[in-house]
Length: 437
Image (cartoon, rainbow, N blue to C red; front, top):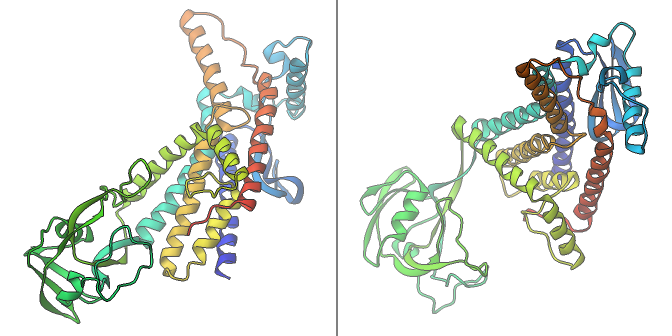
């Protein structure tokens, strides 16, 4: 049931993200006087629509995106001084200009999109991606600041009963001849909150862990809070080979992917996780890092697709860093919602974070400088603006509008390629899914 709820939440937020993305285009376009004839969520057959004012609002059958139809998206033949088309590319461009011109009502050429100044075009085209960025930040603020994230605390969760080798298989149990772990020998119990270690007051697990790892095999005083009172204990850590961790708490591995070990102080305790609300800056930091990581994925997308297909064909298992499509993200949402071992707050924060990353992906992806993506229109507007500025500096007459319709053949090609990649990811997410655990 929880998994179904997670998937439903994902679908609702995805549709809301698409709808708000298009609002980000529509609102400034209307504000600048452009007539918006359609506002649609989805593609394909129309399931529902209503006309309000001069705009038809509706929902279509395939929730794979959305669009707003801005009247006069492409300049007219007269505006660009077009000639009779001589090849297929020119005919496609001419057809696009004709279809765009047909939408312009008599006497309303001034309301066509192509008539806008470059700054206004940029505001309209960037409004959608920026809306996705805004949604992502809001979701992360709710997840990190409003709910909080699991953080290792100074409370003891488990106490090892014996010393097990670091490279022992998971689930290894204690044997009769295994030496007792120092924490168990000292009398530490699950639920104890460590107040001080070796005379040093502690306030975080990172601090406790660092002090333990730096300790040699000598008796160390430990003060814990147990049942509302402080208890003084003495433990003698052992020096044992344990994995090296970096500043982020992640295990460092060698070239073969095995954990790097070094001799450190070992006590035999693990921390309990507590939900801690994070400062506002943490949400913005996560958004910035997520944007950067998404940009790196987009740059390496072709190679990642090749590797993904190769892994699936060879029968390999996808790792958690593999790219996924909507089906994969929906599966993540279902798995997060069904993690019964985690508190509801943790699952909610995880679900919101996943949806935030989806919106960051939409933000970055839509900024690619390729038509029909928003970034393609941004580049066209910048090129047109640059030509106008050069002409102004030279004292030349104002150049004609850029014939953006000439990019329609490229837009068709990009659309087909992106559609193919999307269908491929859907297929791979079904036959070889990425699993969180």
